Image (cartoon, rainbow, N blue to C red; front, side, top):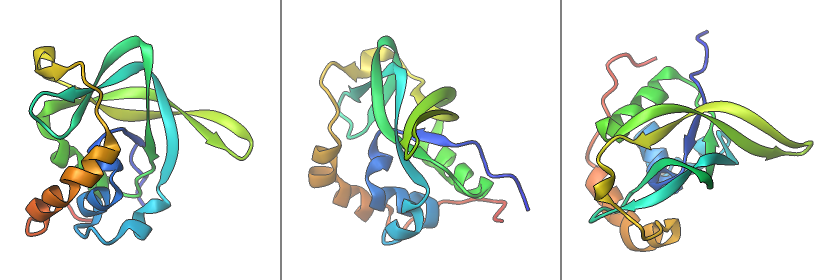
Length: 156
């Protein structure tokens, strides 16, 4: 049995669970299958920004801020490769410490996060809002992706 991939902190469009389910399983209806992989968390030292003329956010370094999101405990390297392919070169995988709450209080878990890897001039000072994305744009994203398949050459 292979070692699970490093945990991933997600803070943007992938927090829309049907989109995350599609990105991991190829089926947006598989929310229940992925929900056990998620834990609410926060990352210090970064802020979430809107990207001009785009539906998705960016995370950039800012020592005075923190980002909320989910710690995603992936089960296979295939799942991780699918998410890396989904995010593409616009983001750089960066190690972060995620603070998560559990029944015993809190703990910190080392994970990766997709950090903006483009010019900051493309970013807006407007906050990015998950609820707006889910209400206004998620269905369009799912319509776009429904007939696509995330390719992973080394299925496990």
